[in-house]
Length: 167
Image (cartoon, rainbow, N blue to C red; front, side, top):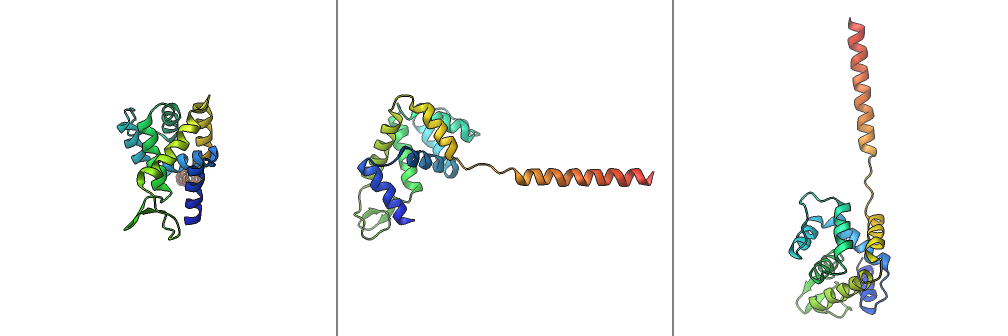
């Protein structure tokens, strides 16, 4: 895991991070840090409902990341946190790899924020971003719901048959 984190940060720093890597990182933040993301949106001046769905959050991000620097920095912080790039160490911040040169929080967040700004500063970025982030969100599996409904229907049918036979 540390190698992947180090590679992500190295790619961001060198400008070689792919759009898909960044979209996946945003999707991970939406899936795993939804409450903190809502706080970041609110602190950057964007109104967001406490019950906002993943789709609504994607829409707010894709619409505002190109123009709201405070939001860009907030999302960059959440991505860095999600990737464990903000692990504290006596000598500074590091990814946890002893060979990795520690850098300040500002540099880490700044590099990720710069990557976000480049991606979301492109023409038609908001539509592309929304589609890509939605594609990278974890899919909700409704199998348990369907099984529960089937079992419930079977129980109701069984009760109806028993009651009909007792008459």
